[in-house]
Length: 339
Image (cartoon, rainbow, N blue to C red; front, top):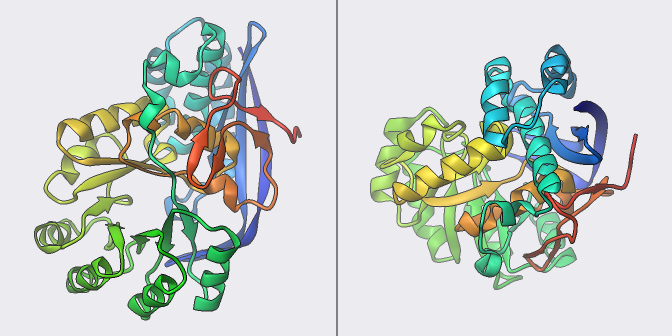
């Protein structure tokens, strides 16, 4: 099996701002695994919050190149278990590799991933579209630029309620709020009351990830569901989130790929938690992988490629929130910008 690494710097359509950072470009690594006439593609992006850069991902994958390339016909689960001990310190690298292997494996089997997993795609949820923090005028302009049935609004400012009130004047779309750890306990409980009246569906990670006592208090008193993101990173965090959150947002890069992501979703469902998968501003390579998990989800945030000025791949397409799959097997990805 041949390992091919390609580094990209994805330009965004607009400056993207959340409570802790602003970016105009998103560095990304595309992993390709080639064998027996089939290629599988995976992706991981840099993330300063988790101290991950593309050079670090490349370095960690190069260290185990021989182990990867000497892989014989293993299932994705077997492959993930073999590689995990070498990359448990870098889940982003593991994610890119795992997605690529799942893609390669399904293509070799002559199936799309959701077919391989026996998932029924008839009732897939719609994806939201993210509006980053900006001036209210710019946020309104972004909504008008792309009318959408569900918007995810990034907050964490001193004017959060006023922002949502103004945005509500311009659309009847469902709102989801992501404060990216920007609020406190009382602020979250009070904001939930006001935001529910403004057509908000749920709040995502309003407080700091490690404020478990605070999460429990909010869980008891919030009039809106609370979805864990930064508090739910790896598989063990799903059980911790029970009775602290109403649902979990699984990020493939944080947990190490599709293989553990599927296990996290399954456990969350058993615990009665709402299930969601989110993206991290990746290209259609990463977004297409997320699409195959849709039948298992209550909510999804897979708009990353829509935020790009120029994509580097084709695969799933999205129209007014609805996802359509590629005719190609695996995740359905084809690189259109090959470095």
